[in-house]
Amino acid sequence: MRRFLLGFLVTVVVASMAPAECAAQARYQMFAGYSYLSNSFNGVAGSHQPLNGWDFSFAFPAWHGLRFKVDTTGYRGTNLNAPQHAYFIMGGGEYSHRFGRETLYVEGLGGDGGLNRFWGANQTPGQTASFVAFMGGGVDTPISKRFAWRVDGGYQYSYFQLIQNLTTLQPVYNTNLPTNFGRLSTGLVWNF
Image 1: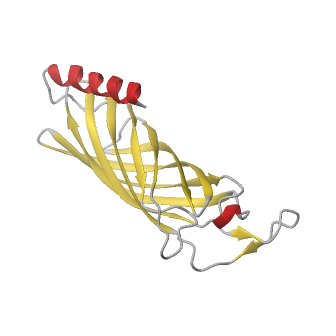
Image 2 (image 1 turned 90 degrees about the horizontal axis):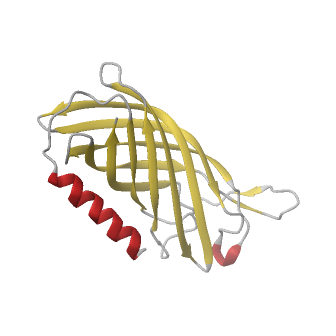
């Protein structure tokens, strides 16, 4: 982890030494960075535990500020004696507009989420797949001609439920399990 942070800091410092220019809208964008999810999937009232992870996205060329985007995130953590290993793969649209040097954007994404089998309290089995939706936005601040620093956030919905047993995989509907999450991400954008 320390090597990753040191390498990341060196990349940011070196990129920030180059003159920042307002280049024309990039054809492609690749983003990688840290991500924070506001709660774990078994985080019932009184035991909320946020999850930390990574975020990677790829955006295609823009047409009038609108571009198609593919976003993947992964989170790891533990809550109520159960590991939480989640990943999400989403696609959707992003609309961006440049204000001075900064670029502001909004996005709407939908896709699939996956979670390890024994994520419930005390490692109770649960569903491993769910629809996921994300709505949010952020800002890109250029630090060189090809690189920018991104901060984004938004609302994420997913609906994972516990199951009765491993043979029937019938869900147990529990209204106390969270379905609404806040997500924050920050990292480096490569415009090429």
